[in-house]
Length: 301
Picture 1: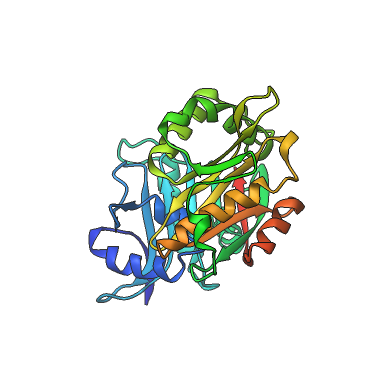
Picture 2 (picture 1 turned 120 degrees about the horizontal axis):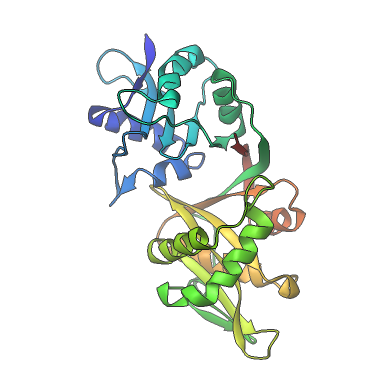
């Protein structure tokens, strides 16, 4: 018999086995728990991982939910029969708050579309805004010319890894990217939060930058792309952005070639999710060899 419980330290081996079996689908989930190559559970009292597993011995995990303080939830519900009423009974007190701990109602629900829909149905959630994506993946075995893994100058364009020293130059691009691709009508752009997030990404993720002659005649950063979630063997790529006046020149492809080659040289595959309405991005990723493996959603409650 299986039931939903809040995961403890003793459940980590079975949780890891489950997440490794769904790594491409769960890169964001995994990255938020991974520390120096090992899974750890959230320390904040309002956060947690809830799993559905057998009640005896070391039974395998069949489904899992990650919930973080602030209301970000990441469901992985691959089984149609996941005892969703039991999940609802377990999580409803978490949403309300118990034992002096503030409630943590969902604000966002992100993951494979089927898992997001099942989670919302179980908890009777009605999202105020939905964003539909395709989840796409590329094997680490993809053939990549070795030279793409090194900083390269192509004409007047130079593609290389960005670092913390590029923060000031990248802040305007990050703002433009968020306003175009991330901020929904329910939200407003937060410059301080955006800067803090970018600063952390430059320290912890692999970010590529493309520099070339800008609109003012000097060398400027024209585009960026990078990882935003590093799982066990899969890196999730996001934040691919080229200044509007410089699109259609192959800049995004050159950055992606650089990222894929560099990460592939480390034996790592890549995945990403892209809006279904972004025809140009879908075409680029398909020509790079990415294939759609599932529908993906980010819902705002």
